Image 1 (spheres, one colour):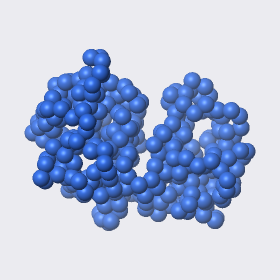
Image 2: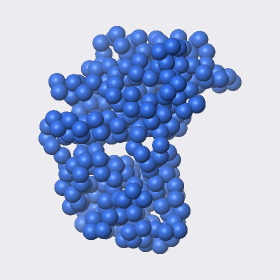
Image 3: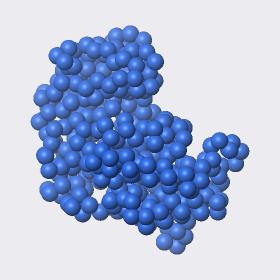
Image 4: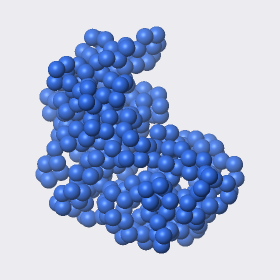
Length: 349
């Protein structure tokens, strides 16, 4: 698996989770190295990963494992190759199926190989929950919490063009902010109020935000799926939401973030005009949610993703230059506009 870090450091730690698994997962070997553009490992950078000194470990259902510190110098915005050997048949129930980075699957313990010619190639993350790089004490972690738009659904695979990754690049370009990392916890299909593709935002907020080491800010961009599921034809009443319920859910996220000492920024919801099931009812819900985000005063900062991505000639639609054709998910250029909309001054206060 290939994953990119944000900040520079002399060590890394890996964290794995069997969050949704019903069976133990046996790791026969785990290694980490700097990754080349093709996913191969760079010579001289391969390191064995241990857990309490042990090279083999069992990840029990519903649990997490954090590795020992690994002495591996990484620069800012560095891609790592994480290799895992599974000695036996293993169900993959905890997985991000839209990883946007490559993974390679081959038979046997190939964790020390620099490349895997002929391996099955895909783009998912299995069990990998995070990579920690001890960094500058003046920085911290920004958690990007959202749905497929935050995950980077319509961006170029392998290019790291989702808005959280592009925000990380902005931070690294500013020496005063280079200690800040960005953690992308976007899940495609995520909703505020109800489960769908994964747990509801209200249910996963503790695990995906509040328990992250070094977290100081969270940026929330949620609710478009709550709205779309409400207006989608033939959707049962049990899946419908109201603007008031969405706002109450977002307000709970604000309260919980503050309870744990985090600052929270609210991202306005992007337009979806052009969807086959777009409706005035759904648009009224979006406008109500955005008005609350902009004017309630509940957030420590507001990021107007709506204004950054909408079509100036038709504000109910995404800018044509940012629309890959589905009228929902911004392309690479749209994600750049979203990253540029984040006011870096909020980190200097």
